[in-house]
Structure formats: structure tokens, C-alpha cells
Image (cartoon, rainbow, N blue to C red; front, side):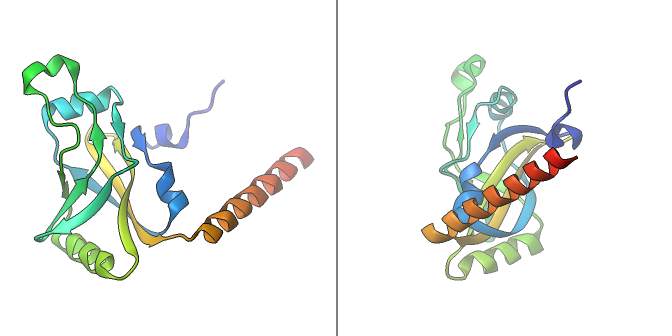
Amino acid sequence: MARKSKAAADGKKIVAHNRRATHDYELHERLEVGVVLRGSEVKALRAGAAHLSEAYVQVQDGEAFLIGAHIAEYLQANRMNHPTERTRKLLLHRRQIDKLEVETRQKGQVAVPIMLYFNAEGRVKLEIGVGKGRATYDRRQAIKARDVQREVAREIGRRR
């Protein structure tokens, strides 16, 4: 019998995952936020047509926006389709926006999207992380530490 993944157990249907975010940045805080979308965008997301690799989060005029995320066109929407790389508004509480703005104004701090998914209620959510960029040697050390952890887990599994 196949095991369900952690995401399936949480009731999440992951649409897009930005693996580079955890590799390139040392994230110290994560937030779950809503996204303002058009109908054709939601249909395209249900088909799994999204990329977050070049996307980032920016606070402008007291509002948070997702910039550079690619959601492919939904073919059946014909002329009512959406622009694929438009700026999308994020839904946060006022305190969260203020905190995010203060954190990203600090030198070296960035807000990057980590994962785009449908939650258990069927709403589109975006997980964003706030942190600092890693230097090349930090990335190598993180990879080395991950490999050591994997080896330790493998040895423990063999001994049982």
C-alpha cells in the first residue's frame, strides 16, 4: 500500500514549489497568504500550470504583491484569458503587511514565494518566506549537512 505524502495528509494540493528559495535563502519566517486571482488563473492552477522560480514579494503603498510569478494561459478561456506574468495582490492582515515591510527594508532581507497550493477548502494559498540570501559557501555547507543527515537516517534504517 502506498503512503500518502505529507501534503496530501494536510489536505493541500501543491501546484508549484520553489525549491530554489530554500537553497538560495536562509528563511527564518514563513507566512501563509491568500492571492487575488481571476477565474482563468484558478482554472490554470487546477491544471498545474504555474512557476514560481523568478517570483518575489514586494510591499508597495501598504499592500503586498506577488511579482514575476508565471501562471500559464487557460486554453478554454479564449479572449477572456489573463496575462501570464501580471502582478498579483496578496491578502494579508494589516499587521502582517507592516511587519513584512519592516523586515524587507532591512539590508539583505527578502520575501520569496515558496509554495503555491490549494488548501482543504479549495482556496489558493501562497506560502512565503522571509530571510537573507546565502553565500556560495553557505549553500555548500547546507548541502553537506543535508547529506550527512541523509546518511545518518539511512544507517539507522539499516540497523532496525
